[in-house]
Image (cartoon, rainbow, N blue to C red; front, side, top):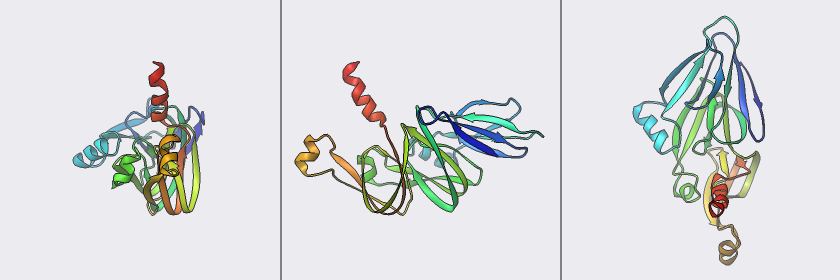
Length: 219
């Protein structure tokens, strides 16, 4: 399998070339174009109840698609995400990572998709009560509105609410004021997410909620 991310950082999309016998799994609305002789099979995102939970609690599609090359020649597939922005990838080797609702785009067949309780801290931070947890061995593609920044946390790090896209599960999340109470309430920052521990996080550089709040008074 050969895969490249083109169009970054504003309009990223994934170009995948599947060799004979190879497969890739993607969100149900991620396919933009593909060779006509690729096989596409839709299935529930886990079992029936697991798929419902991922749909309504994890912000993911009820179904996922598997694209398989059953021909004797390489075939191409283009995958996209619903919003403009960047797409990135990471490799898992028996470990796992948490993604914000809607961030998952695609993965190789060795990756399992599950839900993890994120807690009321995540909900208040507008990240959802549940996180999608990807685990196993293989490649994961994910994206978000805006650019993507990867940071290494060793201790504590503060992130504005709505900007945390992915993090390693050993990291702990909690809420706090950005500064003092007066500064937090009148300085425009309010509550922020405090990330504690050691591990990697990914941030997005733009927020759909921020865009909505900017547009509403002008419409």
